[in-house]
Image 1 (cartoon, rainbow over the protein chains, first blue to last red):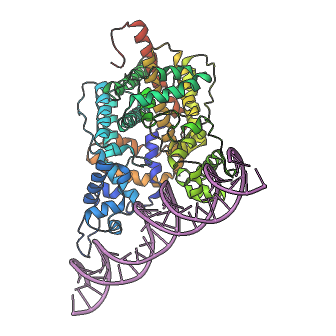
Image 2 (image 1 turned 180 degrees about the vertical axis):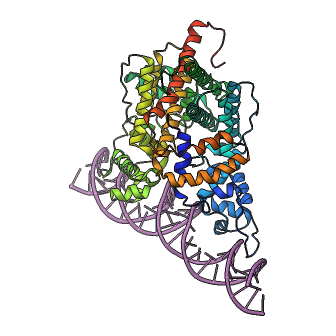
Image 3 (image 1 turned 90 degrees about the vertical axis):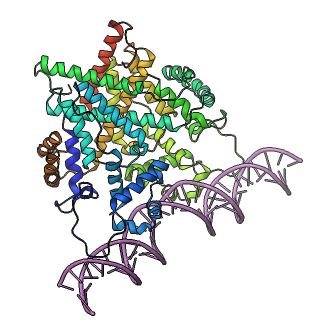
Length: 267
Length: 267
DNA sequence: AAAATTAGTGTAAGGCATGAACAGTTCATG
DNA sequence: CATGAACTGTTCATGCCTTACACTAATTTT
């Protein structure tokens, strides 16, 4: 298993030739002080702009976050924003970091299972507060303080397993992906208004087509879907997959400690 | 564990009052014949439009798929496309179905592990052929033939475990999410040109900051990142997390068969 | 005070999805 | 066979979006 996360760090930085000119938003996110300025005092601040963007996102989703809307809410024109931000992409980076915030997980979990579980729960809870976090077009590695804080928290929890570093990375990637998928699913379900009658209509449309081509398993599910009328995605849904992953990691620990070095990771 | 997938089916259909007017793209995807037309013969077809959109996506990514671009490539104006499609969202649905295509997995795997493994591999392989599949803004349930085909294939493979239906859904959701996350990661890594020297510069920038706030685990990873110079995301990376999930499902099977009914799913 | 630098405005270009009105083509029916 | 309905593709238009450039006004340094 190559260390995929580490890759993302390195690779995403391909554009930054020196430490002084970092990729958009990075220096800002890390609070690097810009050189003292000479002209008129800025009437606004990057923090204020990001906060306004977050307001918009909280109210109407990520699609509503546009430069003109942010600017007009601040009483300036869209172009003025570009005195504070190099591009919208930079805003998105800062928005992600601010939206995620610091990870709120217990620092001293009683077991690695508990630590990982609360991490995943905290992750999903965060996306419930700010659903638009899942819509942010963030590509590449997490490089901002809070995003790295989340990663650190997860790795800290996993470190208690005593697994080698390469395995920790693999597990972190697995869990991060799971948390993200689950949060996405929960968001999708929450976003659509459940209407059992019309859902049944589609089931009636699809079921014969599915049966006709032999997709019986899916057809059965669809047919049996009517009973499940409440569309809430409860914590049990989050828990199920998580439990499988925890069990899988447990098996890995046994393999690593008991089975000796007969197999390399992932095989 | 509520049956999350099934939810998605029902809920997504909330907009379709009757079978005759289905949500955008659904009837088309299922090949429902439209009523015989009277006017002039259409110079183009939905299939052709989707194929052109796929060309554009393959060449320049999903961002390049715009109505004007598709239209100009077909020699018509953008508005003419709306004689074939109700909206861009509909195009995206068809694009997803066409891009994924039928699942190419062995129909008779020798074990459920093998079946699931080849499903995940096929999934990831597909996203390597059409990376833009991961960018499509598809919300809600898979309701098109090929997407349901992929789900069916996964459930078929999982059915060999003998687990109850509710568990199968949970496992399918878990695996689908994993495959998607992994594919996303692989795509991100592949998309960025790896440049170890500059990656090291960022590591040098970040490491002291991370150490200063006590993020030693991440800092160590970052420091040790230099050796990993090749940015390929090999099959081992896909395999690692998959193996954990397979182990987790194995544990679940043991729990379900051996442990009796002392615990409900996911607890 | 003068010069340099910067904040915000106005203008504008180029891109996007999509709506409405319209011209021309073709088919079904009288 | 003719006529009208239906349909395709065009033009015109709206309202978004990001972002580049030139300009004015304010402020700090020299």
